[in-house]
Image (tube, rainbow, N blue to C red; front, side, top):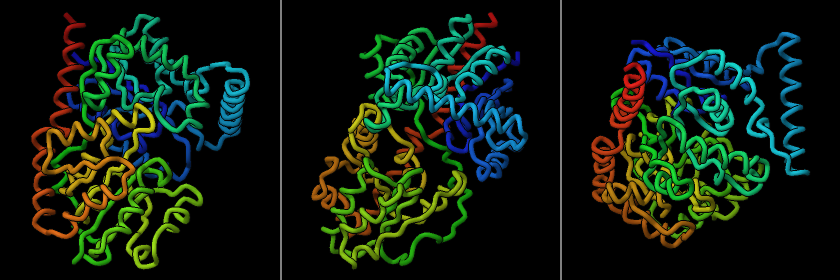
Amino acid sequence: MVRRYVIVSGFQVINNPRVVKEADAIAELGHEVIVLAAIHRAQDLPRINAMVRDRKWQHIPVVDLTRNGPMNRLRGTWLRAMARLMREAGQRFGYEHPMQLGYEAGSLLRTARRLNADLYSLHLEKALWVGTKLIHDGRAVRIDMEDWYTDDGLPVDQAKRPLEMMRRAESFLLNNAVHATTTSHALADALVQAYGCPKPDVIHNSFPSEDRQTTDGRTVDRIDTTIPSITWFSQTIGPGRGLEALMKAIMLIDAPFELHLRGTPRPGFMQELLARLSPEVRNRVHVHAQVPQEELLSRLSEHDIGYCGELSDCASRHLTITNKVFEYMRAGLAIVASDTAGQKEVAATAPEAVRIFPQDDAQALADTLRPLIENAETLKGAAAASVSALDQHFSWELSKARLQHQVNGYLEAADA
């Protein structure tokens, strides 16, 4: 029987590939899948339209700030103003309101209720409040904890969030949802300890291994393909990502190499970061703009070593496994990673592929990078181990099967 499955996100689909993968996986089972998202920027419309075109699921932006009609412009202005007002009330008076999670919250709830799904799937902070309301309505909900939302981000960002409301929602949802998923066993165990909930299943933040067959084979980033190349990527190039230690470490390495960073720099950050380097080393560092998800694998595949320098400055960053590790594996790169619990979890399964160093320790990082840069056979062996580990333990194909079994198990039991 075809059932209706609604994914509650409120985020742009191009910025949340985990939602897209889940939608594809459940639609593959033959169910009706609807993604509740948003559109924030006109310049993103071509990519959004290209992504959702020909999918087997429906994309509904509950808020679309790109529509030009007078009523839509008025609504967008009102929503942004109310969100600012609620944030100000929270910071000044400690008043907590769902709009502090994002101005899409109310629209998400109204649309979710109207759709009357057989199962709702919650993603990201904006869906926490929505999910509690849906359960109180008597609706079936599952939650995907991509991060530990109440312990994620820098203190300045945390201060803007309704943390008590979010903690209550996390606890309630993890204990009352039909099932839960997260990104690592370390994070799953920590959630159990914090909230006394059933242990969430682990769905790794990886992508299909079969995409390796469709890379474009071009050399776009690299300047000199005869020397090793290190790469790092994120949506934002900024502090708190281990780049400061990386700059110090590359100053300690004499062998030739290139370093390629991909993302949107925070204002002034690259100038500050590169100021630490000698002119000779600075010439080895190259910065590239973000590319669409479907092109990222091709660009990563040009390089040799993937860098994961995450810092344990919050529980979420310490415990989760970011998609960087798995994207480097998919691209066939050797991996150098800081000693967060999530990354040590991967290294315990794939020690030949992932080399761990003490985070923020530039000398240890240089010592970890040096054998890969100086020895071609060592680098080749680590790269081969990376591909093997992904296929055997971490591929999206494996996680997708677990997710489909979990969702179908609930829907079939509900039909009985």
